[in-house]
Length: 254
Image (cartoon, rainbow, N blue to C red; front, side):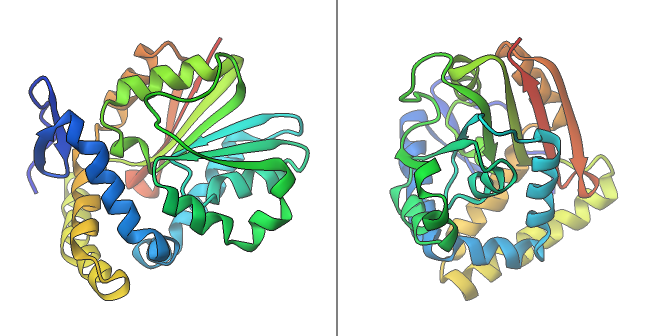
């Protein structure tokens, strides 16, 4: 595959490999996740061979949840990150925010949701306009969701706003492999296998075609780290996972 991460013209953005008006993207992304909500968790396991669970555990290892902390998990979908956070810090609280209500509904059906109902809330909302006051949270996470946001700098600015001083941002996202040969092999798998899996398992090839295209459009590790710094975060760092198929990005509001 060629590098398709060129910057779109003003007023437009990427929806996979398509260029669309900014005002259209949120609705298109909402449609994708509404379509896949009921099979989302199953597809994550199948697409990654279960490796996404290892990545999320690595996220928790670096985040090091503590009792008393208040977590905001944006694009939190079915609650994977929030449940992990609360298992490690039973005295913490978590808010899962997602623009797609059907994803949140699927999360509330999970057994873990009942077990931590008094510590967890589910909110429909927009990462670019969070419905929270300044300095409200100790930790902000977003897992495989930032690449779907229409204006990523706006979402990062909102993350900075709602975090308390001393608060921490952590992003888990698909990224770029530093080795060209490995990247080509990964692209072959992504573009030829994942959409077919989506057709067979979720009866939805188009949504998973978008998802793999959106991965290819996302900035590389250094470029995204620069975006986090531009939003005001300090001590910005990242760690590659599985050779760079995914990466963890961390930043602090000092």
